[in-house]
Image (cartoon, rainbow, N blue to C red):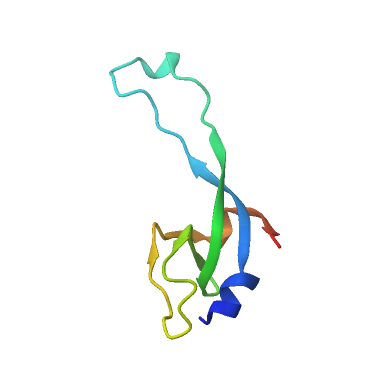
Length: 89
């Protein structure tokens, strides 16, 4: 991905994720109803397949024309979990 593409691929991605149950023993009859949570990630979508995206919040060496840059903090999000993709300018 070129530096120009980095500028054109900045997004907020809203996605649904699992929630943990309490980490202690409890009667099943007293368990709360299952739920999920909505998360938001901001970054550059650097890789995409038919099933997943990789979004990264940090890219290094962006002013060096001879460098592709390294990324840090990348996360794979399954597309079935994505609720919304908002392109940023």
